[in-house]
Length: 103
View 1: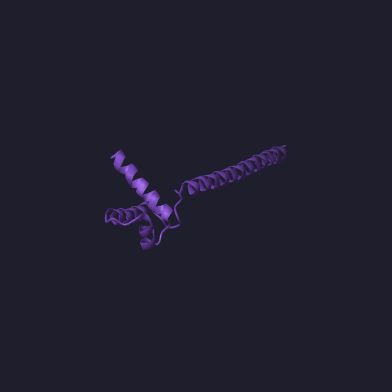
View 2: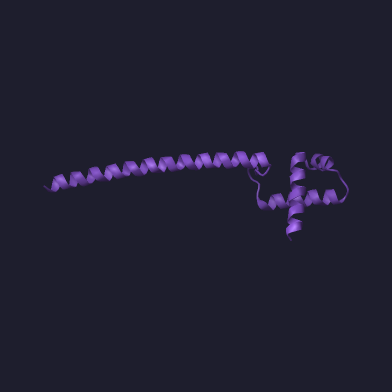
């Protein structure tokens, strides 16, 4: 009798473990899809960060962009001098303008 109960409980536990594994796999798949979607949207908007970029490195780059822009350099010249895309220069200038308006 005890063996039958133990076997039943083991079977139920195995069944629940299978369900948990399936749910975990579905969750991981959903997270991967969400991350891919976010990556696609942010890169489309020009907001994606390159590997190794932090808020500090972005702020430092934006400070350089602002200094060069304030010195009268064109966005094209700034991009060439900093070896970044012109789109990044425009995005930085827009972000700096938005921050100035908010503050």
